[in-house]
Image (tube, rainbow, N blue to C red; front, side, top):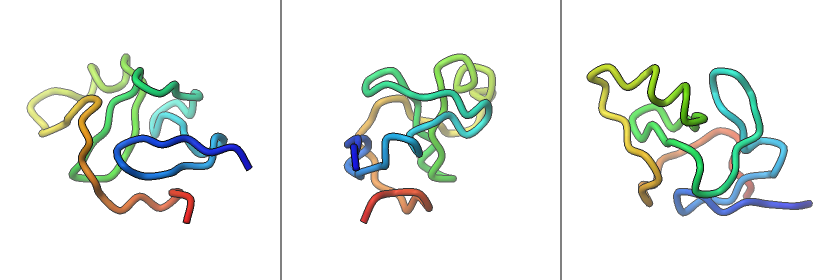
Length: 69
């Protein structure tokens, strides 16, 4: 099983996707919503970043349902 390390967590490659459009994400080219534990592609991060506390490419840890254990 191929895995990706992001935000200090391991993800299955197939689970490392944008929460809005489900496109596959690349390491270093994603955004992380630390409050909700969701990953986004850059366009959807920018679209959702309207005053909500979102952090891009920071090593913040949160529980994410599809992380690899």
